Image 1 (cartoon, rainbow over the protein chains, first blue to last red):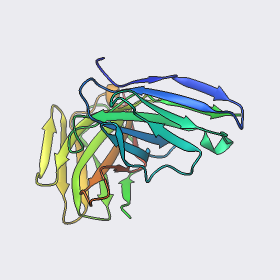
Image 2 (cartoon, rainbow over the protein chains, first blue to last red):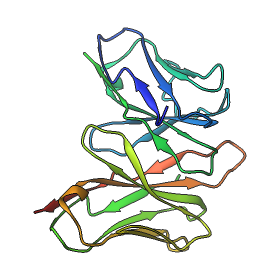
Image 3 (cartoon, chains in turn green, purple):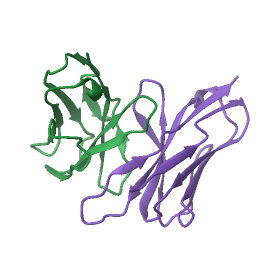
Length: 113
Length: 116
């Protein structure tokens, strides 16, 4: 596609439920990133993929968060046993390589009630 | 740990004014610096990317400068327009350390309002 696509755009879930957020990067982009943005804050890094492998997952807050990119294109961010503190916008981004310009999607707005 | 600070947090100017947004970072060993624009409820749009070896980049009415040694960058917007109203975010990418450190560290942004 023309840009980074994220689904769903909005998700409301109950505390304790499991959530999956999907990211479809720009075609040909090997680098893929997940960030999380809370209200009034800048985005915070979660995880970086180069191809299929997670090259840096140091930003994942705990073991409830997990992300995959099995074929080196689409990525899924998975959150288990959601908590109200997980409510935020989850942003996906991609680039041709780690040194290139990064392009962001519109984000998935997650609300945990 | 890298920290990025943006001043001011909010800025309101009349249409037509030139303005400067400031960004500072604590660790000068950066790979590049990128300025983004974020409209309410939207994702981030890349404006300018400055590699660590560069001093400035220009795109239309926007000019970004980088002084790596002092840990500062500025975004200059000429002849501001109401359509420039948005939050502007600065982000630095640190040099590759062998641990896959290609992550961006963001400031909290400057919220710009251009009054017609």
